[in-house]
Length: 204
Image (cartoon, rainbow, N blue to C red; front, side):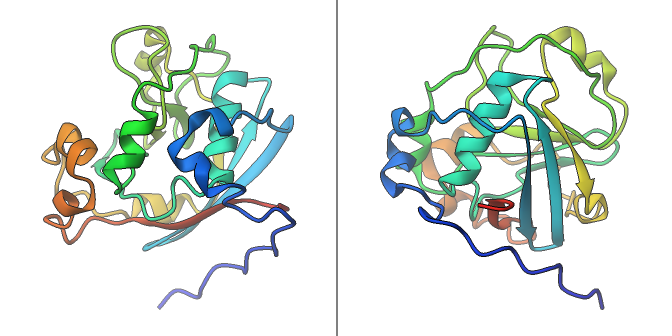
């Protein structure tokens, strides 16, 4: 049996979520991120830590910072986990929150680092400047994504084993559109799906 991860540092005021209203209003979540920061994710498979570098992808680094600070990822599911490819999350279980952020897009960042194992990028559609809240961590070398403007803004520096251990049996079956519109009421039909319990910026 694995031992629990280290305790998170106590938050400084204002404690995340900095303003719960930001979950329903993206305009309240526009802080500029530190040049380098770490975010700890506590999951049903253990902890992992992402180190973000703003010089790699400033738009992505800023958006991720704000989402973590307001508690956006707390309770969200790893709805797309494909062995050897990637694991994706970032659609909230509350359809009202999903709707509020649906069109809150950010500009694409130029690729300064390849999508190698352990790197994290924002998911997007085939259209430019379409990323909102969904992110993915690469399980393997996915350099083919570089030309499609999936720009890594950081990497997993601790706990990659927790991500490797996520349940992958559902593959591509979960419908993203139904997650958006139905939230947890739909996701509860996938009882083995792992989730994020909480995420915090370390030191805040």
